Length: 454
Image (cartoon, rainbow, N blue to C red):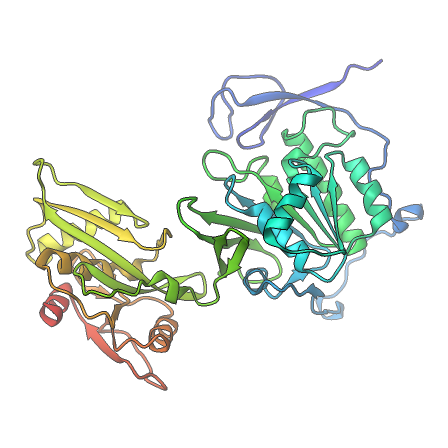
């Protein structure tokens, strides 16, 4: 009997090594190599009608002009946010990978999708029993006779059920729990994830059936398993959010059938995830009393314009050492803005505590909110209330100049739709005032903002 072939895989990056060593040469992590047995098997995991024909057609090169192009056939869901993220619906024959932290709502989102679709769907769970999934469906208060539930982890038994049911949509929760008999290693290992995904890709392409996978993430926030997993699938979605807040965001990291600049926003409720079609109205609080230290920024999340509320608190440092704290905003960029205010505008903030918060529990990396951050900080420092109908969209440079930002027309249109009176932008920005009621204020530097508002 031949000795089984073994290799060592890095559990962090998926790099392959012929023998064990303390450090991975690829990602430089220590003690991440795990031995796995690789053995080829003659067992067929997925039988298709085309596989019965032994005569294989060799690929032939074609002219680009001779290749016929047809629009992808998509399955329209009742979830408008998911349709927007996927580029108009689920493409038939595609593989979609959804990643996110534990308890963020990945299983709830895809179970809702199954229960709302009129097509026959199969929900495969390797983490929960059928009764647990039934309890979640009762909580969502949805029922669908076209939704089938299978609690199994073996790909051979899963494909056996798929041949009997013949679903039009397959959901796997999660890819890390599946295992195949072709590879002699434990579920969740590098080789098991890669082989199981390859089997699902072959099934999806040959039967033109879309497959949605749920993936775990590691402690760094990246999808667990080999990096090649993200290259193999057609679409990679990231489900983000803070468990202390009710809002969830679906971002696109990769999409072969649409844009990667879209995102969907949901609200977590007791009966499932609710779509947020107009997030700007929710992210901006309705204040009954005027308070200082609050400003509104016109930002973009992907291709979607949002109006967000920024809160700042500036107070005297009690313990001698000033504190700098930010929630939802880059702390290093906050320190840079405070240095610009002190150097270019003459504000003595070195002895003050500065706290910054972006409401709604979301993280914003858009530099276009710099001007709104400065307005909120100065409003709190002088205890002067800003007009709640003012909004800001500009970047701040190290010289204190106000710099233009991309896709400004979309920001202005969103602010005008929500009834804002004025928007503050950079002076060297070309804008068209067609069908816009709000007033556009152009600024050259931070000093101009101070003179206008304070």
